Length: 191
Ligand SMILES: CC(C)(COP(=O)(O)OP(=O)(O)OC[C@H]1O[C@@H](n2cnc3c(N)ncnc32)[C@H](O)[C@@H]1OP(=O)(O)O)[C@@H](O)C(=O)NCCC(=O)NCCS
View 1 (tube, helix red, strand yellow):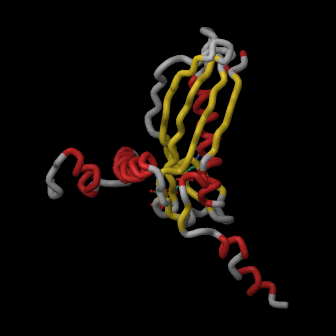
View 2: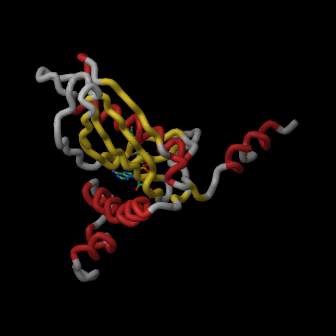
């Protein structure tokens, strides 16, 4: 048997990877209970712990979309609207909004619930960007996203502007090339 030729043949898995996927196929819900070890001295959830949970839930969504191992490439600005308290139940919902070539944008919505009083608060939401890696650790193409609902279509359309903004901020794109971003400020394309 020719082992070298066999090693370079595409795997069955690569034939099975879809070209397009719906956002619901990457949807992940994660629930956590805020315990003493998760809090600051005011008995509120520490921001870093929440960001850790956000990173995990969104990485799983990106893995489900790409069927590959993924790494976090960037995190958009996160602001904390209201504190989450000790004993609250935190639900994190993540799904892929849009993919580009090897990268995917994931939106995460966070809700906290005080179960005894039956009160919920929308804590925050954020966008994380992940890159899919092949077995050698190199960026590899991912399926396109086909949005279905009105909200998914809105998120899909906005994702291109958000991508251009984060690529400008990370020094990977010149503001002059951000045509989609310029269009919302009504800036002529040659300025
Ligand atoms: C993310 C990473 C794989 C990109 O590698 P690279 O050699 O720059 O690869 P490329 O230039 O081909 O970019 C790959 C993709 O990443 C995207 N990307 C890279 N940096 C990015 C950033 N700061 N924000 C958004 N997307 C970014 C590129 O736009 C490209 O997307 P596309 O293929 O969909 O167009 C590499 O920088 C890396 O491994 N970073 C560390 C990841 C990590 O360890 N994360 C955990 C943090 S502790």
